[in-house]
Image (cartoon, rainbow, N blue to C red; front, side, top):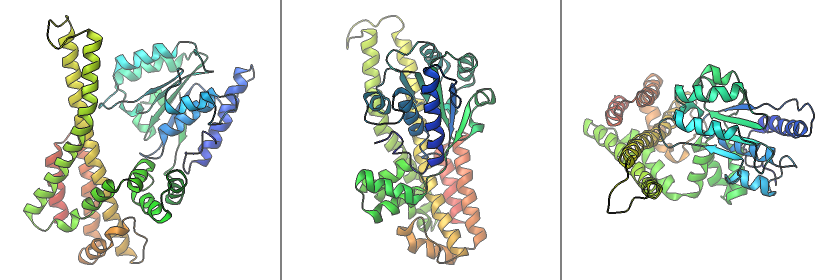
Length: 385
């Protein structure tokens, strides 16, 4: 087995990183090591596997054989337990300066067990300006055995002073056939279901796996795909928007509640707080900050959940437009073929395009911190018109 096996449809990227890992080993042994650099920026659409690529590369750098997955160094790097591979991820809206400064200090240390000190920032597009400035110094004056790996959707999501100091690697959206083959090989998913899930996920490997292996996820998506046909009145539009918003809040609440309980318990332990008794000086301030962070995380989770619904609606209207242009086109959402063909007959291509534009406008409004329910209500009314 190889650390690169699960990087679906990224053959050119894998070849680049294989060469870099060999160059890194050469440099560690005193050679020139051309092709290896201290900072990498992995770019690609959501679901393309940016963080998986970074982890695989980190595993290859820590292993003598540069890519075998069955060594202790590779296994621990891939699962996030290697002492010299730090995974920086956030459930918040942003990565702050204090957190980055802590990782910069760690990056300056010599590797304890591995060959390189590797820091993987999975959401580099969420760095605040102050956090980016704190990271910049480490990129300008890199320690000799440290490698930074930043992940973001596009180069424009990272400030120019950061991206200009990184080697950029662009991932493509994996083809549906490759994703389906991976689901069949790794998860034992039947070929027909795997291909259907891969097409519906539109290259998002994580969503494809969820659709292929979880019947509940498939049922929720089926409900979403029936929304356009249900928008027959003003009341139906308001009801559809309310359902999507409530489902997003419920999903976010379930996930956040589990995380928040652990964080509160850890905070009490670190401050030595008993259930009853006097609170140490400073504890209330730390608790208040935690509550603020939790609120921001819930906000992000709600918006992310709604964005997933909007992506499914985009794929529905894409199918409608494709059908209007060519009735025999292969549908992304074959399970909703009846609704798609009905809408293709009833609407004009111009009306379908306006629907697509409305969904994109809703996504932009949510990114700009619009009230989610109001944005959804406006969208549903536009789709009905």
